[in-house]
Image 1 (cartoon, one colour):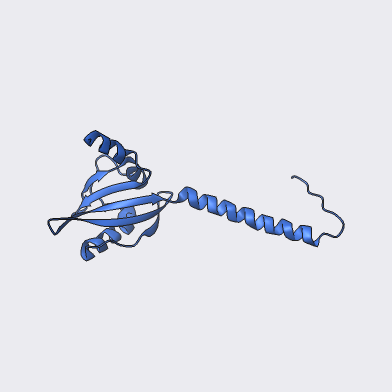
Image 2 (cartoon, rainbow, N blue to C red):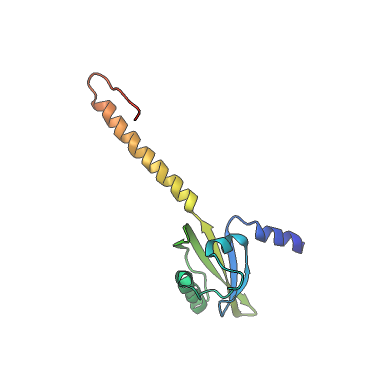
Length: 139
């Protein structure tokens, strides 16, 4: 069962990592590691400048001891939604779990659809305003 849970953890389609209250990384899946671009010798979160935005979110969760709303963040070429959850053991906060959803492809697709919609509206206007005929040419 432990092997199966490990396989699930390493093959999730979202980034997932956990830290203790000192921001030492307890566990991290490969996707989260690629988002954060952590090196093998750097497993304390928050030591790099790029960690600052997530670190602020982690600090708020540590202070409030409750889940924060999703935060949108651009990180290392990815558009991410990040959500933090406190880990509470025996009524004591022992760390945090961070979930990272990659929205990059979805936003690219939405942008392409918006571009197509704009061109459709322009072409529709041309067709409606044409009196005799239209000639379409390729560059």
